[in-house]
Each structure stands twice: as structure tokens, then as C-alpha cells.
Image (cartoon, rainbow, N blue to C red):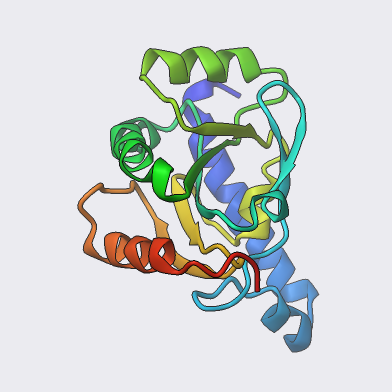
Length: 183
């Protein structure tokens, strides 16, 4: 398939996956798979660009802004300066911005080069199987999730992150002020 069709293909696959999960599971399973603000974030693991395993559970005690993106996604490129600004402003307060690339297997060097060219200094993970979208019930990219120090989802957003988004900044301020390390 031509690269320009990949975003549409991925969006269709994501919608089909979410639909299939909803149809295949009973009401009890669907409710346990909900990704709701105020509920514990789902368990999730990926790899660093170097291939080392990493997980949200490893980040307990930090506030995590998990951002699902891809190098071929134009809105993802447009939001990178906002994510970088949030990282620069709040890393010393305990914020970990984790950009999870859903690019194809074997593209870690491409992802690193792409991010380097755009000045990305925040953490990058690679999920070439796109398990993150299924885990967080994300339909398309970019999508972002703010998880507090205790692993509770505090904010979610589909579409590009904006540095001055009032709902994000309010949720971020509250999460960073909460000094509870682990619940």
C-alpha cells in the first residue's frame, strides 16, 4: 500500500479493532476495558527506541503525558513543539512526556532521526504493533493521555495537543501538585 494511504488504513484498522472488541465482549468486559478519566490507566508496555522494555507501571511516582503519534502523521508533527514546550517547562516538576510512535517495525532509527530534526528531547517509545491504540481505545493519531503519579488517568484528548489548552493545563497543574507517589 502506498505510504500516503497508511494513515487512512490505520484509522480504519483502529475503528475496526475497537468495534470488534466491543462486539466480542460482554457488558462486563467492556466496562472493565473503559479508559475513563478518574479511573486507573490501563497497563501498557512498549520499547525504547533502543529496544529495551518500558512500561507505564515503571513510571509510578511520575506524572506521564502519553502521546500516541507517528512520523507520517501531519497533525503529530504540528503538535511536537507544544509537547516539547510542556516537557521543558515541567520535567523538573516530575512530568514525563512519553511519545509512543506506532511506526512500522525496524523504523527506530527513522523515528530517532525524525525526532532529532524537530528538536525532540522528551522520551520516545516504539510500539510497532500499535498495542497502545487498542489498550487506550484510541481512534487515530495523535491521541494523548495524562496519568498522575498514582497511575490514574486525569485527562485525555484526541487530536493535536496545544500548549495553552486550558483543560490540559488544569489537569497537569493538579497532577503535578499531588505529591502522592503511589496509590
